[in-house]
Amino acid sequence: MESGYPEAIQKFQNNVLKLKGIVSIESGVENLEGITGEALGLFNYAHLPHAALSRTNGGLENEVLCQFEFFIEKSEAGLDSLEFISWFFRDQARGGKKVQVRPFALPPDTAYGRQFGSTLRFHIDIFQDNITETLDPLFEKIEEINKIFEFAVQAYKIPVKEYKS
Image (cartoon, rainbow, N blue to C red; front, side):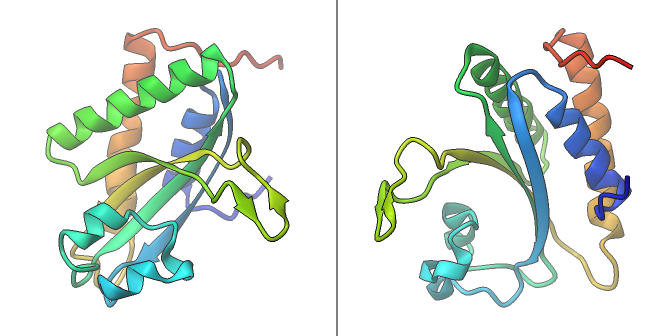
């Protein structure tokens, strides 16, 4: 079945989704150039990593963000997978990659009722600069991260879902 995602992104999403306790994952790419520090307060930019972008007063020239949003089960397996993902991307950032994992949630109450306890999700943010004509440099970075991710899942024996064929 055709997902509509580029191959590098789909492969990475599949590898995250196969971890026990991960419920769903989706992604998108956002051009950060032209987004100012002032604009970060607007509703349309609520999903962006405000602290990171505030440090540079918005997006940099030729910079994009590939953001993966995933939900976890409210279970030990969900927390274990979140812990692994958090460690993995912290380690990648320590190695020089412009990546991070962060929580995201919506307000506890809205005009439509209480939503507290049902909106928590997590974002994997992958920043890529020097994007001019194509997203190929971003896809290459995601492919590299995915190879290391696959290796780490196996090396550290991270629990994965079992699929019956």
